[in-house]
Image 1 (cartoon, rainbow, N blue to C red):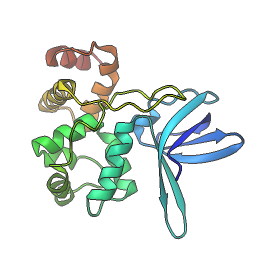
Image 2: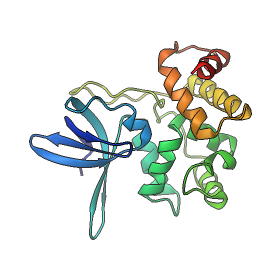
Image 3: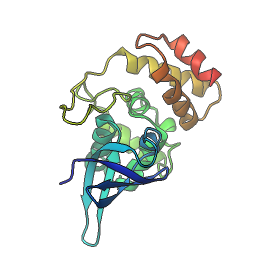
Length: 207
């Protein structure tokens, strides 16, 4: 099984990229959250990957963080009716932080805003994943380590909760969940780790 790719980025779109590894080009399916972190074409890229084998096809999915890959695996392994395509849709519209917050809060409405997720599917996700989250999942914005270093195990902390509270506030102000999540992903890397909910919300509203 291919669990990691390091090579030159040859092509990229919001949902796919091609990575050249020593002359072999790999087509990798990626969520929008990973596409936003890709370097320019021609530069080196490193992706954590998950292989999906079918009778008539072999698919490779890539992620910028271990948290994204862990959530992808959790969705396709633990939730009935969720395949790779729908799992990728979820990750393209909600960061792992926002997804965790929705599950912990039992917010089926937020989950159902992702393409391919209806009310019944959202409720099934809540039912099957409510006890699955723990400190083994790294924060959504944890960067990949440099080539050659070990993947870190980072415990989720109150930063996740502050981001989740900011997301809820943005939705209450009229933002759609995917738009609010995108705004947070844009500003969180620019803020100090101990930023308050008010500081996060202010930065997100400024854009």
